[in-house]
Image 1 (tube, rainbow, N blue to C red):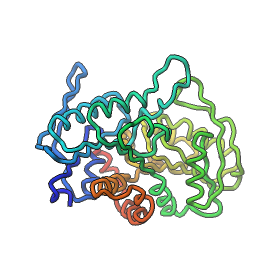
Image 2 (image 1 turned 90 degrees about the vertical axis):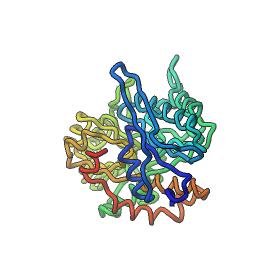
Image 3 (image 1 turned 60 degrees about the vertical axis):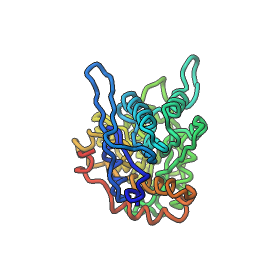
Image 4 (image 1 turned 45 degrees about the horizontal axis):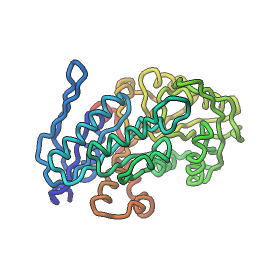
Length: 343
């Protein structure tokens, strides 16, 4: 459909080649030809190796493990597409790492997410597509249209697939900030909710969980959060749940941004299984092959969003008539470790 129309082309930055290829596989299209060169002094050079004149371009680049380099590469490609006379350019950012900087919460600091949003638009993005922003208000930082996807449908479907959804399951929010997300997840699964009381010291990536509010004794627990970087909060929540008498503990996240230390923290924790999507390619997961971490693909979800945008269909359809068909297809496209190694 997309190749035949001659108007749509999907390209990828160096951080999302595998993810974009999985999108193309779903859509039956071919990934665009482009390249990125990183010079020894730190400069980044990008180039499009085919004509995109008058085409609607969808450029996929996550901002995850190497945020600054990935962000600059995104900007340079947006500029290159515009200068190559693309009809429109949609920036697909599966994980927007700078979403954590969503407010001025101490004196003399930058609201980094707003700065990034302005740069993306100035570089040439006509539209932005992302998933599970750390703070919903970031959508308002963009003047151009932003489509916000949710991993909840994929993750809840996988929870059913694992057979853990029953009367003994409690959905747990690691802190008050994630309580709304946990409540929505619990409503979909028909479960009760417990909340962790978390305290963070300065800009340390590890936060201390002080208390668990809610009845978890003798229950299986499903911890819900948008992302983890160090694994520390998840491990602390799991310890707290065990101390409260919880049985099996699972963690379901929209994004994982883990290196070796964080993976070891998860492997040594009471967590039985951590499930997340493939929005960030983590080489350490592929190399270490951890037994407690399972990656499932969000690429079909993003591919459906591209189809909706291209066909000018309401994005609300993504959350009504399409989800179950998409989610079942997603389960058949689960990533293997070989997929992860290939990025």
